[in-house]
View 1 (tube, helix red, strand yellow):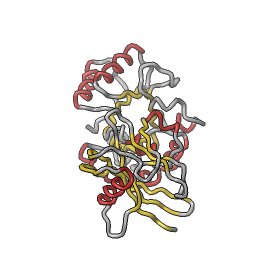
View 2 (spheres, helix red, strand yellow):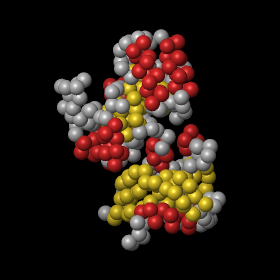
View 3 (tube, one colour):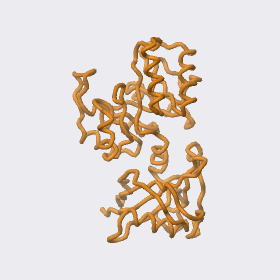
View 4 (tube, helix red, strand yellow):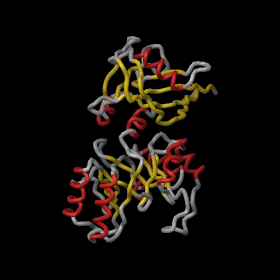
Length: 307
């Protein structure tokens, strides 16, 4: 089967919209909306290829860019290896230089477009941070717990899972939600008896058991849904449910769960390679592991005491 190597450019506006373009008639998967880019020519680097493609397609000159991630997408008759670059700055005003239609789409409006596979997942991954903090699951009302929560916000943590094994007072959750909003952080609830209608949350994190019991995504696209997984089968179930991101664990041995058999780095990487949904590695993770995790194509690391 033919393998095509290609590059893709992620161009973001000042109001957090992304540039997408519509594939012209006569091209493979014509009529679908995609991110701009194209094939890498022989003896051409990926970086030079994306600069050339964006000049040809959009009439812009790329000034600063950086590599984001690679994804292999399998079609019935071909494999496409895609290298994604975030375009940090450029000269010129983008237009359809090849007579293709272009548009600027926000995360919430992507559902209105007929998108190529993986486009939404890759764009969404740029809105997620590289570190996902999970709160201690007990002791929520203690000064120690609250101080730790405040310290994580002060450290710049932008995505927090509020984990609890008991029912929490709504006023307490509201106070945490307000703190997160004031620090441009997002709060996801992993509490018991989820209704997916809780007022003071940016979304929810669901357990593996909760995920396996679902037949459809439990909320609209305006909210975030994350899910815990432990193997590829569960990760693929999360993709089927249109979950926004997954956590795979345990990647390494942990002191808190010594009985759990670690997956290992290669097994975790295999999950990343087979799904387009952003993946966080959990279990024995530390800041020292973040660079390796991102090189493996994952979104980043998650943990209670990882950072």
